Image 1 (cartoon, one colour):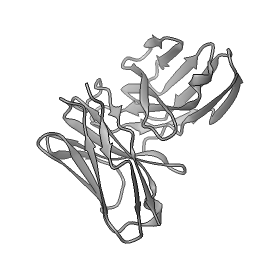
Image 2 (spheres, chains in turn green, purple):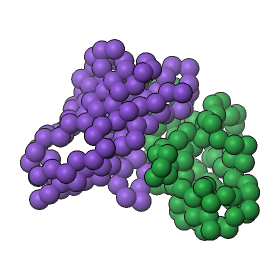
Image 3 (cartoon, chains in turn green, cyan):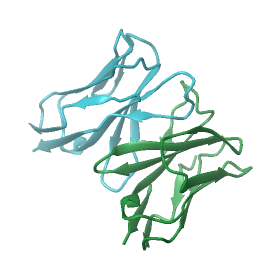
Length: 114
Length: 112
């Protein structure tokens, strides 16, 4: 079974621009969660999607948004980029997102905002 | 909000030594997970724990779900150079679907 894939792996943007990151979950997995990883804040939960609906949300501003498609693939969008948005963005998939379902992570997208 | 306090922050040990790290929280968690992350990669699951008091092994790794559901530890026995990396604990709370809460990580360095 193929693992979680994320594209692109690296992105460089400038302040004020917007960016879209993509995540393809493991086949059969319907829950996709997104995380931001920075040296200062560690791994922080952004949001979780299940069956095309946002089911859970972390404490990030509205500039961070996401969506999920009928094939469970997910995208996240960051608008009006700020320098502090530079981070590794990770997505993870699981069967249902519930307690006993393991989350498997992709390799991440490294976003640099200049 | 929920937080996981992971310690130690970093460890520098000799090959062959045993390693122990732990996570504590003021909140009750229903699932505890331990991940390892190599540079430039996403976290890889090492051990998952689902019941209070559960003790689970995966090769040289052993982890336990604390009886109070507020803590967990990970032991690595007879460390080898490829154990180098960052280890994270993570927890899930019932009703909070898909939302892992992570510890700050323990950076492990192994001297051959």
